[in-house]
Each structure stands twice: as structure tokens, then as C-alpha cells.
Length: 210
Image 1 (cartoon, one colour):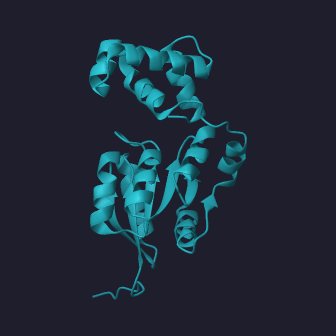
Image 2 (cartoon, rainbow, N blue to C red):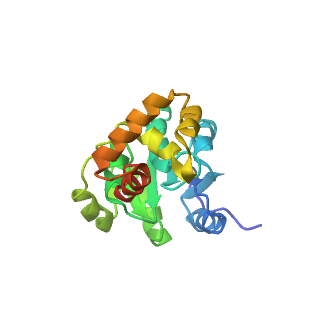
């Protein structure tokens, strides 16, 4: 039987990625590193915190774009509920506001998803020493990012307005009354400099405010 050459204590990693092929390949490649063990794989944002509290990873690799709750949203929860777990966020699209949100959420790193696995493994090791690791191109984009003008409640109504949802639909989803929904949507439209909520939603996503 071949011997396992892993060190006595390897780095425990949680991987959150919703694209099955990428998910499996990344887990396999990271698992080939002698000092890294993927202890959990998650495909939806809502499951991450519970799994992290159970499996106790040293580092959580979170895709920014996850179904349900985004990696950016979950990063703040991990900071509060699993403070010993360092968070590295992975993105395909480096939207300007994402880096600012990642740092505000306490993330230890922000990298592009298609980086070589060797770079990702090095970043995992570096964040455990207390470093912050940011992809240079993402850092350059983030320098020009403006803070989001939207409040968390305005973000909520914009997110709930997808797929042509009516005011009544949004109110039901968020357990709000309809006048409140209208007020928050109007405020979001004004702050994004757009003409209606579909444009406001598109602009907020483009800027990385959602």
C-alpha cells in the first residue's frame, strides 16, 4: 500500500463552488498538494456556515457567484461565526465593487477562478500566515471602485425584483408592505442614476454592489 506523504497536520480546506466539473477538478487538484486536504465541498451558499462549523476548515474557498447566498454574503457570516477560518473568494468576473465588499466582509484574499492551482495553493498557505492575497488585476480594478450608495434594504428589494417580479411579489418575498417596497425601489433607482428598477438591478450588479 502506498504511503501517505502528507504532513501530520495538513491545511483543512472547504470548497464552495456550484459548477460541478470545476468543483470536482479543483478539489482533485488541491487534494494532490501534500499539505492540503479538502474536507468539505459545498454547492450552495446557505449550506456553507453549517458545514464550516461542523468540519472546522482552516480556509474556505468561496465562489462569489453561488446560488442562494453569494460568497460575499457568506464571508461576513464566517468572520462572525467561524473566526478561525480564513476566507479566500474566487471570481470569474472582477466587478469593481466586489473587492471592496470582500475586504469589508473580512476576506483574507480575492483571486480569479482560472488562476493556476499552484497559485491558489500558495495563496491558501499565505493567508494562514496572516497575509492578505489579492490578484493584481483585481486590485487595480478595485482601486477605482466607488462605495455602494445602496443600503442593505435597498439591495434586498433589488435582488427580489428579478424575473419580472411585481411589487406584490416582492412585498410577499420580503414580508414588507407594498408602499415600503415602492419607496426602496424608487430610492435604489435614484441612487444608481437609472430610470427604472431593471436598469437599477443591472447597474448594481455591474458595479458589484449586489
